[in-house]
Length: 69
Image 1 (tube, helix red, strand yellow):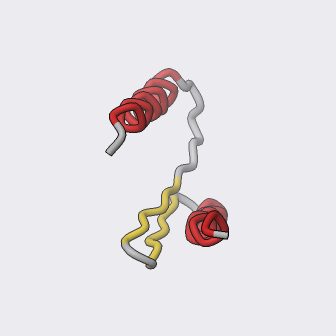
Image 2 (cartoon, helix red, strand yellow; image 1 turned 90 degrees about the horizontal axis):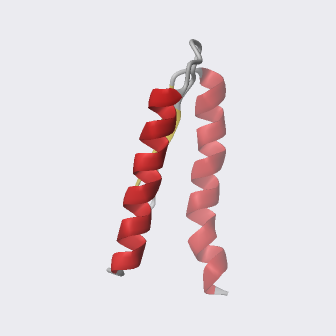
């Protein structure tokens, strides 16, 4: 593992948590994608966000395949 990439990952997580803590929006929707092997697990707080996360999962699955060529 590249230590620089690990530090960038931690910085992105800290930045996301900071922005989440500072936001004053009351009606926040959230979602996420967990990829285990070739299988994505998609979740969201509303059906619209879940559908958006499915598209993000497809991009995350296809991106490594496209980078090979």
